[in-house]
Amino acid sequence: MKIALVGIGKIAVDQHVPSLAASDDWELAATVSRAGTVDGVPSYKDLDTMLAENADVEVVSLCLPPVPRYDYAKACLEAGRHVMLEKPPGATLAEVYDLQALAADKGLTLFATWHSRMAKGVQAAKAALAGKTIETAHIDWKENVRQWHPGQDWVFEPGGMGVFDPGINALSILTEVLPAPVFLREAVVYTPENRQTPIKANLTFSGGVTAEFDWLKEGTQMWEMTFRTTDGDTVHLLEGGNECVVNDQQMPVAELGEYPALYARMAELVKAGESDVDLAPMVHVSDAMTLGRRVTAPAFEW
Ligand code: NAP
Image (cartoon, rainbow, N blue to C red):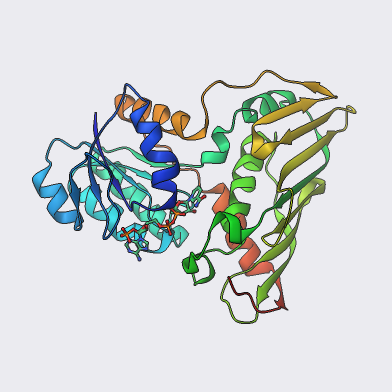
């Protein structure tokens, strides 16, 4: 299938372009970006022109930051194209519900992707926890924003989510592997005095689940979660969900990496005429913004 990529920036270059190039399912037929391009691929600065001139592009994958994404997604669906959304799927829940309804109305596929759910060890952890009762679970998602989002001011603007931009990846894994849903009970969100979005957050959920998100971690980066069950089992997810250890035993994991697996899933969804939109991770983030106690943190500069 022919696919177009919109928003040629960090994640498009790092992950989307190589994953498409390595896949037999896809041909990258066009890009849309104000500045970014991909060698050898026709590039457009304007979405409407790309859609008008490429009737054979069936699928559009949107790699923009969340705030501008809705308008692009709506235009693609209205032009009869299937749509794949980077995470988080939008700036607000309401606009994603609207896209979901529009895709259903038009008989098109909408895939709200969660790349961390495709991390290689996630299904092993889900299988290990199936049918169990969680006694406690803890998430440490601690990374250095200066290393992973250099100079990307949008992450600190309204809708950019701040530390919940990586934190929502952890929540996408949590909501996939837990055998029963949990609800946010308390949150503390730390926002730099000169910025609009949090740089650190501590969350307490029902069911003994806690999480610490920190965007100022220097040195070794940490993307880990540990689950203890009432049966006495311990399940560790390490390396952002790519390694799974159950009771000190390393589990076999999936072969495909996160983005190749997302594009394989998109191909399946289009062929099956289905959509996949699960907003559970984003609901937890919205809840943290609603329920969270605000703490002013020191100013942040790059
Ligand atoms: P980015 O590099 O800052 O932005 C991607 C591209 O989107 C930009 O290069 C820009 O291209 C275009 N863009 C930015 N603002 C725009 C606007 N207001 N209107 C239209 N186009 C705009 O961001 P990114 O790191 O790739 O992240 C994009 C999405 O991927 C986010 O939702 C993020 O959460 C997700 N993601 C990022 C990473 C990561 O490691 N960075 C990992 C996984 C997922 P032009 O200037 O050429 O138009």
